[in-house]
Image (cartoon, rainbow, N blue to C red):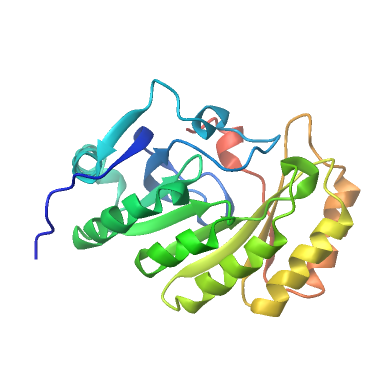
Length: 244
């Protein structure tokens, strides 16, 4: 079945080929669709330009996005040795455009692409609209020490909704800075544990001027492992190799 042409538009900063630079799928070749706009302002944000919808943003229909993805796939086909790549939906915060994703994601699936949603986990009601079309959900825990607001209530509901999609692979990651405290780790770990202990948690130490002390990283890792079996301590490789 061919889906009808799109009329819906969303603000898209860029569509490009690169390699996943963080967490469990580091090194995976992907095509990235970066949406504009975010509902959270984090001090450590590495794509600050994408948090606002500026005049340079292009409003694209789903079909325009799909055409660009098809072109990038053809240009980089030799790099995808195991079939079609996953499409990383990132930002900004892609779930701010959930209605658009409701149209885009089924079309991506129809074309044989898998979908990789990168999200700050603060919009659970938006996730409900698209979760059935997501193959991988990479959810950030946002700590008040760097993002200026407490989001545990939203994160809890988000993880419950994500867990109910049994076909999706869901993991949680959080950036650790010199401002991260042990209480934030404990609350996050307890939240994950009370939903499902099988969820993987990735601790991502900042490597810039916000870098945490090594003894704190060890303390946070040990605290997390007390309750969750799958905990990883991994730096963000795209920052080291300066990938997009």
